[in-house]
Length: 218
Ligand code: G3P
Image (cartoon, rainbow, N blue to C red):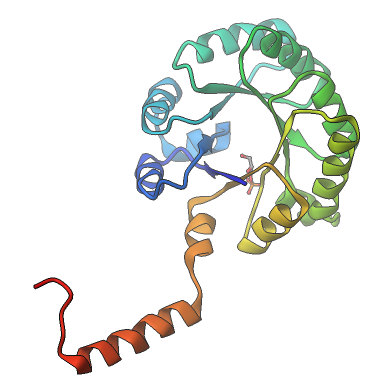
């Protein structure tokens, strides 16, 4: 499973990239607004930190303007992945861009039929929003499960990018189902490393080691 971080905060991206476990970055207009940074500038900076795909989202709603925006965004760097909403115009844009060799992430997916359409449009990634699905009384994991089944039925190559992940159990369940990618807020990625018994174990080992009076580095 690939790990993407869902943020436009440079410090977090640098910190997580340094682990060697970060495969890409996703942003959206809300995350850009939260960063307080210029969209083009921050996207360029992120693209220089990670080698993998960096999703940058168009804000136009019509196909022609989406194409113009995508053209500006894809010139930022080779690893820019254009993010488009799951609408008819978004999928027309997806089809045109992927046909041209540009990576596309189709976002705001809330049904398996929408995911089927995105795959038919040649999407590189489909982003089903687990947390927001849960928030509205649906089971976000059922959505991931249905999409996995449908994509496997037809050998679609579109990668399932589990998004709107709120906690480590969303990651665990997505991995069990076989989502290709999980995009997570920095705190969720950091949370994956943690276990109380790991901390307790280290504490016990170090206390016993101190009693030996030995050092490894002389
Ligand atoms: O990047 C899209 C998605 O991950 C948003 O998550 O928590 O705002 O629903 P959230």
